Amino acid sequence: MRIKQKATFTRDARGLFTCLLSEGLHGYADLNYAETKKGETRGNHYHKTTGELFIVISGAIELTVEKIENDTVVKRETHTFTRFDSFEIEPYENHTIRALEDSTWIALLTETFSEEKMDFHKIPE
Image (cartoon, rainbow, N blue to C red; front, side, top):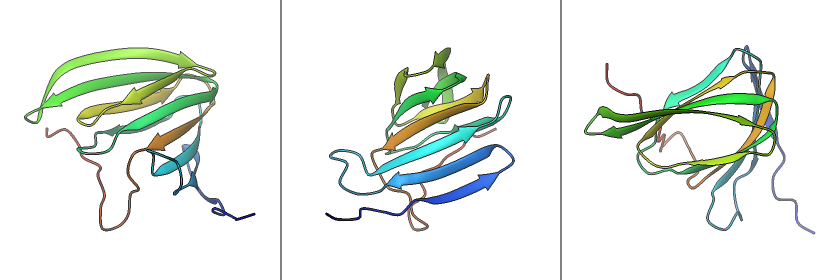
């Protein structure tokens, strides 16, 4: 038996967030868990090299995805997801998640974020 990782939790006004695993995920580098309160928003950023796979555990969320090319939004779509729905976010897709109900989800990332490599980017205004 081998302990992989003890969970650490971050709480703020939006809810709770934790990285559940950060190694041994075969193609993914991080496994994260988020709780988000109804009406709160997470994201509104994109990644240049990181992909994400989301699985909704409970509640309902509205996802807005904006495809970025040359610092410009070229396509926008909005979807609603509920319990056990899943979706992938590709690099250069700005993603914003709004909780329609108190919601929880898991996100798997293809790269681990660190202080040295923060692959979070905002659309220029």
